[in-house]
Length: 290
Ligand SMILES: [Zn+2]
Image (cartoon, rainbow, N blue to C red; front, side, top):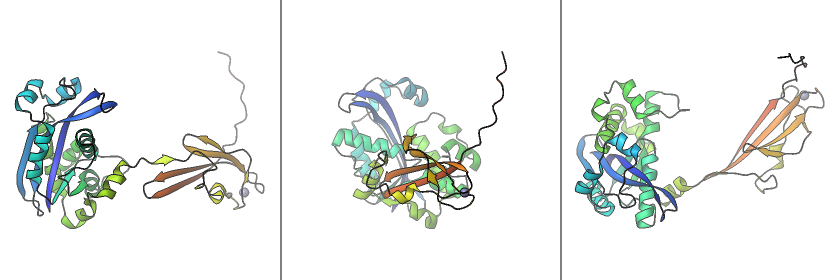
């Protein structure tokens, strides 16, 4: 397997065809490695945008790419994709830092080819969570590339311009520092039908209490203090993506709020339950006159 660390730059513009905002790729940069992480090549191309020739201010400021450069050196999306496919070969694992670039790539294939499948991608891995895990950084927040560089003592100065090739090189520096074949294997996924279905799946929260997946047993709570079954005192209402109701313990008189959330994910339904004791209302103090 070949590992290809890729980075994209794109220009956001309104598109009638996309019925909204479309992130059109204008640059692809990549570094290829063999399965022992020996560098075996780089790729860099710019694409002349067709949806909007005008680059957004953010893109110009961040990348310093100019319209002239795209018009003079740019090729079409299809030409660049074909060149990339040759570069990648047929067993490439495409690696990106967070899956944003993957989503933009899929968005572009949907726009130009009618389906999100990325033809040159046999496998895919998001190396951001992998690197974060290897560095032992708390997983509750996503670590940015610049923070990873800082912690690993990698200078990010050379790629201050946010150009695709420099950024992919920088990502590669971080990745090669942390790469270990055995632990990385489980992060690499085959880009098959299930892979795309999973990425495109939009989890939904059930908001109808009579939905067949809502089980009565999930809606019952017991007292945290004495273990008795709680008595529900109010109707269920749906608030901030949860079913909520007031409960009281008939044996120890403690009052609670019960919250239950049903989330339909690609792998099935996830139920989250939380019981919180109600704070006793503090004795009213007299309002001070202003
Ligand atoms: Zn109780």
